[in-house]
Length: 144
Image (cartoon, rainbow, N blue to C red; front, side, top):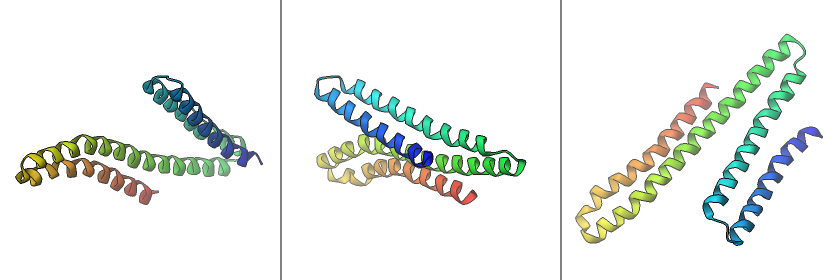
């Protein structure tokens, strides 16, 4: 029962924080403040989701074998988190890069169609960052 409650609490907290941020934005709060509120609520949920399983495994580990099993389980879980972070953060960086370079490439191509080949390279370089992050996460998962 407690296991399901620990999975339900973060989801409810994230949904409530999204609703609160939407309502505050509709009331005229600055978008910067609403984004910061959303980021801090996400960090709170992420820390909750990291701390609760570690504490639960530490409380259950009464023998040396269980302690070693809990440490291996924590290492596997943190490996999956690192794989997700490498993909997620590289995709965010790639999105920022493409968001800046793609409109410039379209503008350069509309002025002179000969610039298409040169400008599409910069868009592809931004996408390359996301692909490298995905490759790193595949390497992390296969190492687990």
